[in-house]
Length: 256
Image 1 (cartoon, rainbow, N blue to C red):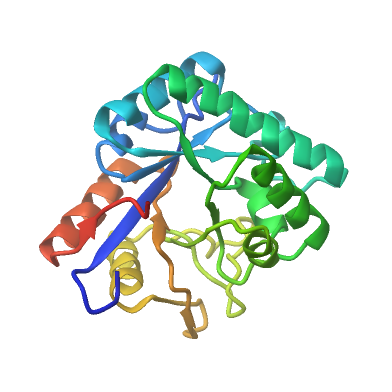
Image 2 (image 1 turned 180 degrees about the vertical axis):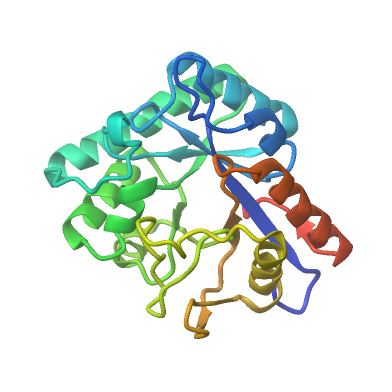
């Protein structure tokens, strides 16, 4: 990435969220561009048949598959924080990884990492009880890397359990000065300008930093950048990112 060797960055996208044939992203188009796919497990979105199609497409393209675990709350797309009992959350984490891994193995690949989705991702930035539960659930499955927001308390629990942590940055989300994401309820949460988004990805890939909404430069040392497949114009935006990275001789490659 931003060391003395050739610059590389992992691009990941949240995929497999088609439910009952109703797609929220163009999975095949995104899989053609990213190096890692965070595949839904059916808890916040996705159904077994459509999830299977996504993991099959990822396997065919050599894209790394991760379990995009979330709260069991499809009505809110997993974007509402829930007060879940930690033992239950650990069990649900393990269940989601196992279900996705079964589908993945049937189609020639496997679950290689875990990335929490939506409200769960943001909750374990600061909630120690839920962070510990998620890590316990992952560790019960095996030695899988966890993709997390830099500064998350879950990082401490994961590293104590011997799990690799993959720090992540977001191409199209704005940051607060404390390193958390601007809440989606605020107008400045999502970046829509293609030039600004591509500049953000280049900044992460070459310097390991992002600039917050107030101009603060935050050191994130991210190994992966998330490009959202469910945003308007996401495919064109992702193509612009890929084109700019290639133009700057930055290789798109899985962190594994």
